[in-house]
Image (cartoon, rainbow, N blue to C red):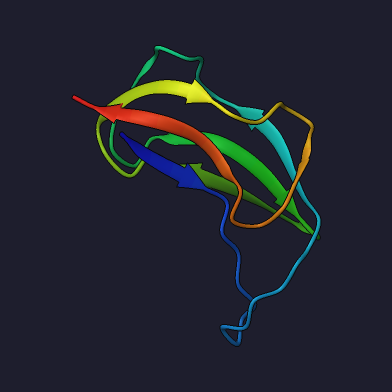
Length: 82
């Protein structure tokens, strides 16, 4: 089982701690996902990011709620490779 997260670094490579909001999960638990498919949208400071699926898999567990504030590096969910 793999995990995906919302890691964020500054443009100079330094770690920063912006407020991160899990804006929308595009899939539900048990849904199949394909490599590079948008999976979740998060807001950091003034930027919205799409987190894409790293592999073809099944979304087995969502660990955050839509609209919740999370820390950078928080595990957002778990995927089982097929």
